[in-house]
Length: 587
Image (cartoon, rainbow, N blue to C red):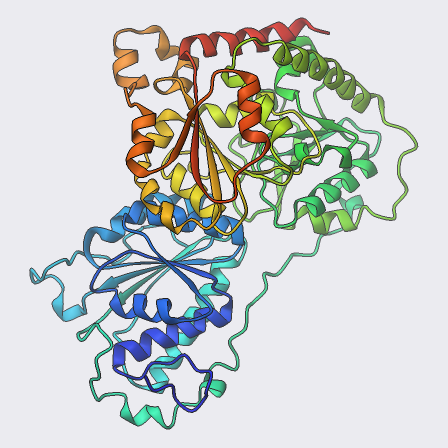
């Protein structure tokens, strides 16, 4: 392979496609691309070959396009950086769609490269060809149909700058996916075609790539707090919704600075890092869902002002309270509309870390205001009562599985939380502590799609991780087990097997039989021990709390294992409801 005039160049001059694709790979590497996920196929050969041979890019082959896309999503969540996703032409790209929707809705940067036939081979019954133009509709931040590759330095410069521009768009707030449709003519393999000869001795790699450096996302400067009318003695609260900051401790310290300045309590969602750095915030409220279920308490705690960090928490009780009381809210952290309640809301696209710099070195209140003290008194009583109830629970049920995870997972463990009931149980029952557990979730579209593959992507090269999932979410993505050989780390799967969709037990439709069980719960009689045996996955059935704690206290370093906890769905729903209701009158 000729490499041009620079000894460290990665440019492949064997034919037009290999030249084009290697320029793309080198540009992406210089921008900061760490990982590319490629699915097998012929039309994408130039891209796959170039990415696989680039020494700075980890390139992983994954058979199933749907699983591959969610694996890429998990990697991008971990890296806070775009991940490349490559497939061949035809229907292959359609399988990326669910993960791209989630990436768009949850602001995760992806670069999707869908190989295609050239224009003259479209709409003429050529094989493996569909209309791929804007295939993902409005769920990408940008769509580009790249030019057919050409051995011309001006066209290579166009390719370079298109990728540079797209990278910047992918990471700009709100981050999101970018789609490139990439037509290639034959030959697809790196066979010499004689069309690149003139460039071999004239292409100056150092000069060509000199301007390609990783960009940084701009942060909007924040006006002074005094302009907002936030008052230290007012009835105000800070609501911390789901968040995956790059530096969780810095995020928690920033929230604490603002809370200290204003003297306001912080209502922290279970998917926020705040519950796992609880000593950093003396005004942390974790039981707000239970507190607000009591009408008298809810009325007494109506705030005048609310600072909302990111999306609202999952709690329907909290949302109904805000909807009914309509306090003035300031939503911090995104250019997107994060107000499903359509209340009196101001939006700031700054982040809490920038905002908190204005709170530092300002006079702090000498004591908590009475409003904040009421919140903290309720929190103390309900938290103690809840912990005592869960500690005395004789059976290993869904609620105390979450409670035990919050106390016994090794420090700094990434915990991937499936949607439906697991994410709600985290909000209800996750006990605040200082274990620095890292919650990971897909709350953009809130679906169960790709749960296993996302968890594997996040765990890859990231130390031991844990996935908390129900049986249906895991079964929906069992093809992810095919990627076990690619996983360089460990994933423990805590499987809550309650024989169906447990979340439907909380809905009014649960009163209607026989339709409810057949069409909504959809129980699947799968023997998970045999399923794990098929894929070569370690498996253990656990029924006692002590055994469960032993399984999660120390995590393996490599491979995948499933810890199954079998629960009676109706009994779990009744226990959860009874527990929450019993706490209403605990004060």
